[in-house]
Image (cartoon, rainbow over all chains, first blue to last red; front, side, top):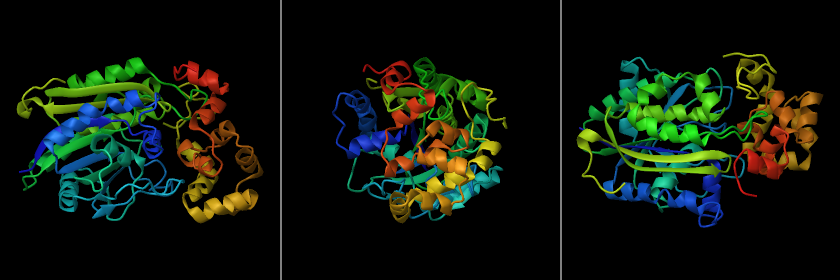
Length: 288
Length: 117
């Protein structure tokens, strides 16, 4: 059966992609941010996953307000970068893990999750930036992807606990998938930021650091928080952080944290990264 | 999680609920249109005519044409959509943030984001 080799978490701020496009990686504003991802990139190089399941939200690019799926799962052969207003970014299209996507959708339905099914869809920075942060800018992506879109924009957005439960089903789907492929799951978004209203520019580094700690050792606490608590603590757009719970829900209770990074502000956002492995199957400890 | 405009349960934090989504539909649809190159061109050529295509009210039109971000959000505009205006008429997202916070840009960077400027 397929194997889950790690859970990764990262911010997906669009300015990160723009900074790479404009060659700003090594400028004083950005270098400390990008350097913090090197251990994460090394981990991916070393562990060579075949498939990346990426949980993110669309930002008014692939979906408009006319149709808003609470959860949507991609099962396309290919996902091209969408035009977010500046033209599609010049990065390679993502190849889909079509067969697993359908298996996952089956497993979701059997477990009373009813997602929208997407056979043709373009994707925005929500998946692009995390892929670039962990895999760099290859001519072709060395992993196939399964995009999971979560509505965290149009209220009512889902409960954090529901995201965590979806992770459990994702785990079941991976463990029942007849293949020897190696999977990673990426929870993306956050950390604290707010783009709208008079509280715009709100960041909460203390809460962000606590989140990076709790996601490993006490995910139930994060899953039991209300949506209002997320907004209050992490800002209106910081509520994206609940998407990390899908990733965490797919893992064991006991995990090893391999790498962790926090930087504020990336544009208007507290930006964070984590690499975790299940304790039961963790690779021999290396300096983290 | 529905709330009345001006009565945010979390202070100064407009959640994009039913009322805001309904109220802001025209502005957001207009802005969503800017993800197509031909619409960006139309916006550049004759902004008023482009806005009229989406049936914006005079109040909404005024907010967009004066780049009054605070007012666009008050009328139900959502940043993820209206940000596309900055693809046609460039402005930094931190300037949009500062405008909504009612702060000078440098003060905003310093006091909200903790940057040394």
